[in-house]
Image 1 (cartoon, rainbow, N blue to C red):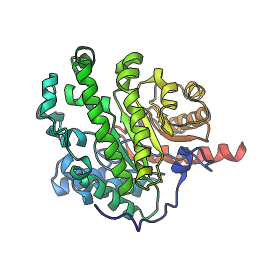
Image 2: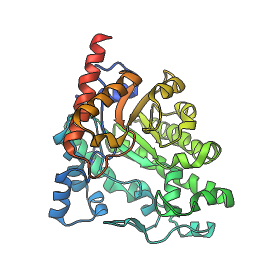
Image 3: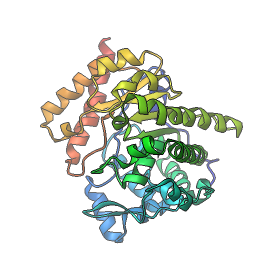
Length: 366
């Protein structure tokens, strides 16, 4: 793994300050899935090198280049390393690929608890995912202090769902059926994934990640009771153990963000789960979320990604309303989910610039 000893001090630390609850002169902004298919340069890069998705993820120089592409276009306040949540199932022995027109393809799925024996449960994620850490270190050097760099991981329940259902959408609720039919095996799998996620996140910080996001993208389908039993305890464990392990090895803990999509019922619990930031999808009312979350946690989100299809005036108006509802402190602007692949990059630029402009105006008059 490359050394991080000579990394440049970050000049734009707006996101780090917002995450820690410190005053910010404007609202910081970044986008989930901000590097990728909506950018023409991404398509050109992929075509030029004739490589698949995971080939790019596993080649640090390529992952670094793709991470930097949106930073060259937009005045973003953070980069997020180009990778994928499914690298952990891969390390555990599941073949995973992304096929154009078909989406995510697994070479096998978990069907019964006996299939847990097929997993490489003693896999060393720090060693086996060293390409992610190398990409993080390389990108930190390439950013040269421009803005902070996000590391990330999928959360245990979301990873479990992919490993059983084969994706985020399934005609049958096979993963949720596991929770009811095989509760002990489900906990065993979730605990295994939790341990791997903690090790992975700690290694990302050691490699140079300055802020972390945990994606519980399939949270909403659990409902309140199953979320409280099969998601929240592992999310908490990840937050506390990641920070604890960093302290034990002499590293300062970095801010951590949790994104539990569609978990409207859990805003209070998430706000007291050990994370510095709670990210919200677009179906949650900002005023309601702020009231429930309280003043001790930063919120992130939650513009409807479809508004990036809107006309310029409509998009700007939506951004202004969002800022007025969330307020400009303890807040990080983002979408309520990822950028859609057919979005016009010019609209992303409008969104980013509008966040900065309107939040500066609000701060100047408040």
